[in-house]
Amino acid sequence: MLRRKWNRLGALVVFCLAVLLWQQPVHALPDPVNPVTGNGTWFDALGSPYGGCGLPQGQLDSPHFVALNVYNTPGDYNFYPRPLTGANLAKAGMWNNGLNCGRYVQVTVSDYCTGINDGAPGQAFCRNGSWVTDAYNGATLTMIVADSCGDPNGWCRDDPYHLDLAKASLNQFVKNGAPVGDMEPAHWNNRRLTWKFVPAPSYSGDIRIGFLQGAQVWWPAIAVSHLANGIHGVEYFANGSWQTAQMNGDMGQSYVIGGTTTGGSQFQIRVRDASDQLINNGRVYSFSLPTSCGSNCGPAYTPVTYTTNGPSPSPSPSPSPSPSPSPSPSPSPSPSPSPSPSPSPSPSPSAVARCSVTYEVASSWQGAFNANVTVRNTGTTAWNNWGVRWTAPAGVTLTSAWNAVITTSGSTWTIRGPSWQTNLAAGATATFGFQAGGSSTPGPSAITCL
Image 1 (cartoon, rainbow, N blue to C red):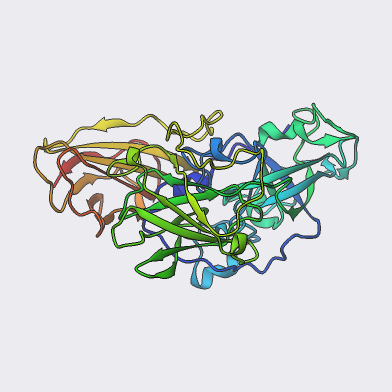
Image 2 (image 1 turned 45 degrees about the vertical axis):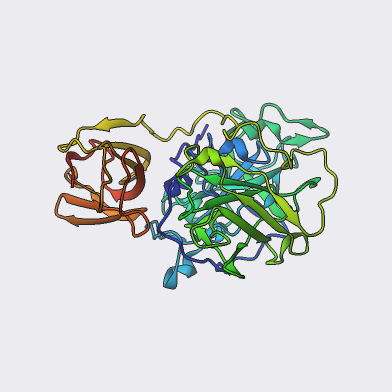
C-alpha cells in the first residue's frame, strides 16, 4: 500500500503578513465544470493552525476536504515563491493562487493501479502495471477545497488534476446508498479520481467571518467561510469609499481589510464569489474587532457576529452566524494534527533581559522549513525600534519572511519590526515568520535583543 504523508505546504503561510499581492485568475487549465481525471493521494490533516486556505480544520464546513496543486510544471520540481507573480504565473496549477479555496468538488472513484504509482519525479504513473476497475469504481463524495499541494513530486507537479484527499474521508465514499467502508488500506493503492467543481451542497444561511491570529486594527486579517460558490475577493469600506482588499498571501479565504476609519476597529465588507459577482446582491457585512482580542487576536480563529445591510439570507437550520454574541471566541477543537513535525515552542535564551524569544518550526519538508517566532518585551518601558539578532545554523539560508524585516550577513540574521509595528509596549509581543532552506534542526543560537 502506498501512503502519502508529505508535510503540508498549506501551513507555510500561517502568518503570511507581508506577502500581500492581489491575485487574479491566472492558470490556463480549464475550470472543471465537466469531469476531469487525475491521480488520488491522501494526507492526514491540515497543518496547524491553518490549512492553505487560511482556516483551521475545525472551522471547515465539511469534514471531507481536498488539496489542489499549487504548480503545473511537468518535469520541473523546483519551488517558486508563493503567491505566483510575474513570469511565474504561467506555472500556476488548479490552486490558482488560492482563488479556488472554499469551492466544492464532486469526486468519483475510478481505477486503481496494479503497478508502482509512487509519484517519483520524472517517472511514469503506474509503472509496470495497469489501471483496473473494481467494485469501488463509481463511489462518490462531495468535498471542499481547503489546502494546497506544492510538493516536489510527480503527483503535485506532473498531474494537473491530481487531488490530495483527507485520509479520514477515503472510506466515506458512497456507492449504492452506503459508505464503501474498506477502500483504505487494502483497496486504495493511489487510485485515479474523476472530479468537477459543483455548488455547495444544500447551501443555506450566510457567510461566517473570523479574525486570524495576530489580527489587530493595523493588520485586520479575516477569514471568510460558509460560501455558496467559493471566494474571489473581499472589498472593505474605508474613508468613504469601497477598497479592494488584498489576499493574505495565497490563503484564498483570508484577506487583509481596513477599518471604516484609519486605524479603527469597525469594519464593513462585501464579498465576491468564484464568478467574480458580489454575493447576495452586494450585501454589506458590518462588524467590529472583538474586545477579547485586546491589542491583537490570540486564538488561531476568533469568530465575529455581524449585522447586514441588504437582502436577508434564506432561513436555515444550518450552523450560520447568529445575531447574538458568541459565548466564546475560541475556535472549535481541531481533529488530530498534521504529521508535520511541529515541536512545542520553547523560550530561547536572550542575551538582553528586555525580551524573550520563542521559536517554533511550523512545518518542514526535504531541504526547507517554515518557522514562527514570537518576541516579547519583558521590560517595564516601551521598546522602540525592536530587533533581534541570532546566528543561523550552518547551511540554513533565508528564502522569505513575513511580519518582519530580516537581513542576513553570512550566518548572522538581523530581524527588525515591520513598518506598522516598530515599537513594542511593555509586555507586548510581535510574531513573525520565515521560510528557509536547509535543515530545521538545530535552531538559531546566540539570540540577542537589540
